[in-house]
Length: 88
Image 1 (cartoon, rainbow, N blue to C red):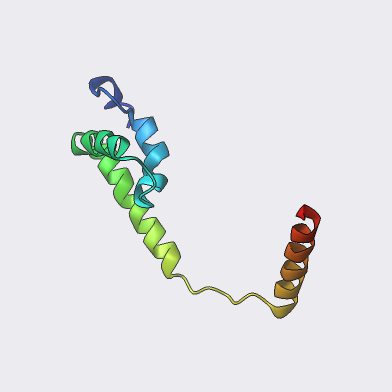
Image 2 (cartoon, helix red, strand yellow):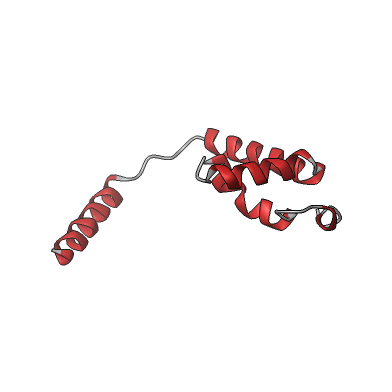
């Protein structure tokens, strides 16, 4: 990715990679989204990275989740109740 960085104005490849999680979660402002998408439009390595990142996110979301054991739920519930009580 670094081969493209000297040609870009605005966001660098490194900055784009650092913003991808927020970009996919729609957690960026419109101006930053515009800068990121402008960079992506002209940077094949970053588009490839984004594609791989999206696919990884999709695959991990599709994995079967293991239910939390009841004992762990109870311990977590007690921990949270104690934490809330200490804040009051």
